[in-house]
View 1 (tube, one colour):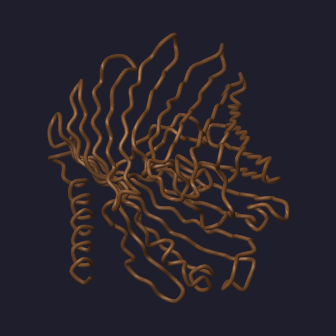
View 2 (spheres, one colour):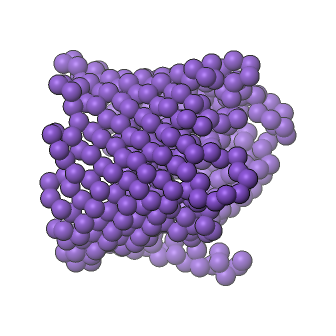
Length: 392
C-alpha cells in the first residue's frame, strides 16, 4: 500500500513539475500547452438524508483546481494530462461517515484516485481524468489512455454515450469524466469516419467495446453503433440535422443480455430526441424527450449516482426544457427544467453567471427537486451554490 501511494505521489509531483517548468520555458512555447482554473464553491443542501445523518440542512465548502497540460512531441504524436484536485470541508465531511469513500473512487481500469489527506473536518483528493497519448494524421487517430469518448449527441440524455456518460445534475464538473480506453479512428472524408473503441473493465461486467460508423447524408450527420456493453449486446445510432431553422437530434440504443442467469435486467430500448432553436434576440431553446423502456431508479441521492447508457434516467419517461440567454456580453443565464411523469416529480435549475474581469467569473447555481411522497425525488431536496472561478 505504501509503495502504491509513493508511486502516485511521485507521478503527481512529476506532472506538476513538468507543467510548471514547461510553461516558463521560453524555448518550448509552441509544443506545450497549460491551462486550468481555480474555483471556490460554497454549497448549501437541504435534504432528508438516511441515517446516520441527523440533520436536514448541510453546508459544504469546496475549493477545486484543474490543471490541463498537453505536449506536442512531434507533428503526429502528443501527450495529454489533466487532473482535478479538490478540497472538501463542512457538514458532509463531519456528519456522513461514508462521504470520503464516495469521493475516493475510480471506476476506470486503473485506480488513480488518491485521498491525499483525510481529517475530521476536511478532505483533500486528487484524480487525473485525462491521461493519454495520441498518434494522429490526416486519415488516422490512435489514442491510448484515460480519455473522453464522446458519442452522445443530445444535451441531456445520451444513450449513444456508451463509454463515459455524465450526470446532467453535476454542475461542478463541466469537463465530464473520462474512461481508460484504446480508441482507433479512421477519417474517410467530410463528416465521415469509422471508429473502434475498447474500454477494458476490471472484470467482464464492466468492459465496453463498440464500433461506430459516421457519415453525412441529405444534410444530416448519422452515426451507427454496435458492440458489447457490460455483458450486453447493443445496437443503435443517432442523428443530427435541421428542420428549417430548428435543430433536430436524436439517439436510439437497444440492449440485450448475453448471459442466461437470473437477472433483474431486461432487454431495454432507450430513445431520446430533441429540438433546439435560436431566436433572433439570442435566446437559445432546447426541448428533449427520453423514453427508457425498462429504466428508472428506486431512489435519488444528492451525492449523485452513476448513470449508464442502458439506464440513463431516474424514470421511464423524461421531458426536458432548457433555455440560455446573454443579457450583455458579461451577464448570462440558463434555466433547466425536467419533468418525470411516471414519478410525479420535477427538477428546476436556474443559473446566473457574471464575468467580473477577464478570466474571473462569478456564478449562482440552484437546483430544486420536487416529488410526491412515493417518488424517487421525494427526499432529494434543494441545492444552492455560488462559484468564483479564475481561469488561467
